[in-house]
Length: 192
Image (tube, rainbow, N blue to C red; front, side, top):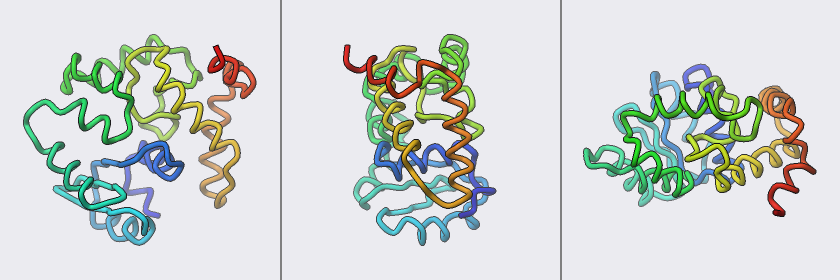
């Protein structure tokens, strides 16, 4: 897998896709030639499409076409596109209010408010450490917490290649620094 040619955040995105938490992917590529063929061979169960150095991955061609069309449309598309990428609707609606051009500013503000090492800590997402791949609508967004919890639990039980295990352990070690991420305490939160 040509990870060196993908943004670090793609590790989180691909793991969420493989875990079945994220239905589709969109990844901006710097080196499409080095990435496209290996990914197409690796992800036999998905359609891998490169359009203008943006990689779209979905389980069928119709969804890929829809992703490309929406992403390249100049009309606002935050809700529909976000939902296709598996983001909770409430989070996509928040991004629509904020505006796509201000996502980075909102992301910075969100990272100032959310507790470090919490399930919704996305401060290191661009470095490949995260449990979700979107900016939540709030620091207590329940759909985002559920996604993060589901991914955290799947990472804890997943066994993979040595390279995958090193990265998986980095994520688990990072998030286990927060005592509230202990599996028992997380389950209590969702039983309220």
